[in-house]
Length: 257
Image 1: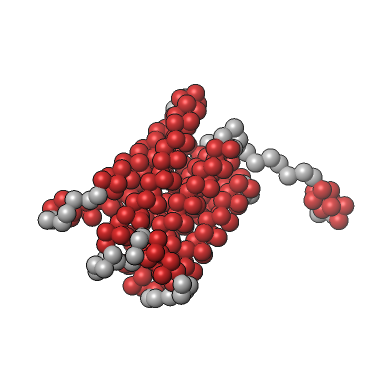
Image 2 (image 1 turned 30 degrees about the horizontal axis):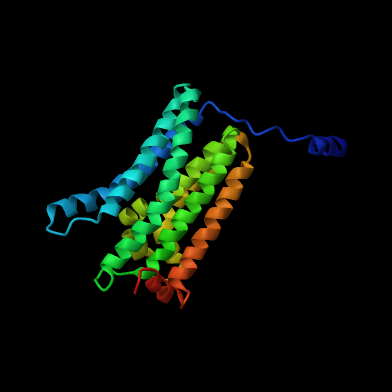
């Protein structure tokens, strides 16, 4: 290639990010199914053990939390299927209802975390500092869902932000399932803690970017901003939980002790 040709090639405007690819329907559905696997594997065993044991019943707010968060995943799965079966009008109508559910989740999530930390305070399960993870999870979710709603008429941005919001909060299921294995392999400290808390869900987040690189040869700007938001909040949560000397006292006050 001559110098002139190289300069001309560099000067050409980049092709627009393709809103659709023939593999999108399958890939996005696989991501949602992976989230389901993490949730079922992470919480299913605990639920079975709780039912079979003589432990006290969960507080009512835990049931509300479970219904809201599982309901979100059911609706997200339905939305993916609506697009897969070419029913965009139903997708749009259900999307408006999902925003009200998202608002409920933003309220119920922190309330449930605080209620459970208060209930377990002083027991072997007591860990008020873990509120750093629980609260940043819901902050991340709220920010990503808000961005997804604001870009609801830009399909490339909207669907990536919706997936990022749900992938982020899937960390709870994956961590319950895989954190003991990851933590046992990596040990203690800031980075091992981050890996235990977030590595499986982060790998799914990164797979979304890898998919775009494979199919579009570039990363979508909304995805990049979303990943930056995810990274900032995960680093904040890890710092508060594993490093910050003041956080445990703050978290203990937040739960009323």
